[in-house]
Image (tube, rainbow, N blue to C red; front, side, top):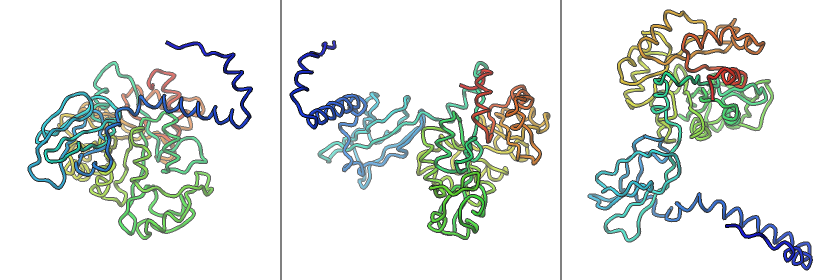
Length: 397
């Protein structure tokens, strides 16, 4: 119960104080309020001991809901003890330290290791986004959502560079479900995000990415979509993924770019984002390579049988992609085979495209066609307009 403040006594006290003391008192009160409000969010971190965290290894520090993790002890053989995953499910012995979380949030894993005086702890953040779970929603006939993917993470703000950290933030703010990006390998083996092999169009520099080191590329500024220099540099794939983690799904269009499936997967795994990433492939060989790395990965490819063949009969659903005016019979065949359908809506996709231009002019001919044929994800350079249209018609949250 809140007590009514003694206003009269407080005002008399303030009158006796000088201006400096009043300001100091107000600041202290504000800080007290902030710490008090935050305390409930951080109470579960009381036992977190960062110095001891290196005694145990967690397979993924950023798992998605429902994604299994494994906890192991480091530098010890035949370890005995117990693991508490911090979510109220009790403890398990070290030999059975596998776990999945059913709710997003930050947890402290506590290990009591025989022979170690203090409990060992590790901080873990469980993300809400999980493609395996999310894609199952499309099996529900009452689920009408059509996802929107920002092409090169673009929005309608031309002052923001494509494939940039600021473009990720803008796409998230616009309500996008996913963003598309283009990983490439530098001369020194680093993976950066850029659509073109030559950096001339998108930065203040020039030269092929495969001929430049990361330091050289980072020395140039990204240009916005009007060609003006910005204060950003080209992000690495790790920087890009970390900016998107837990906020939006990411489509990695690494094929036919210069980064290999193994290189891209290594970065995704390091970021703990295998459940938040699509691996887009331009051939069935690439699909096979992706699933050989991890059968649970979310491959995504062009929608013709010679490309999606290896994704058939896997017991789960994959997205396949078309241009918005692709052959209807081909699209229906893929849907009949159990695939989820997506479409590129960009005007530039086929050179003379009109879908986006029509929508901006209030002509929804192509949008209605995509809805009627069963498209469940649309890639676009105008996500704000497209999301607005879908929301108005009950197809987007």
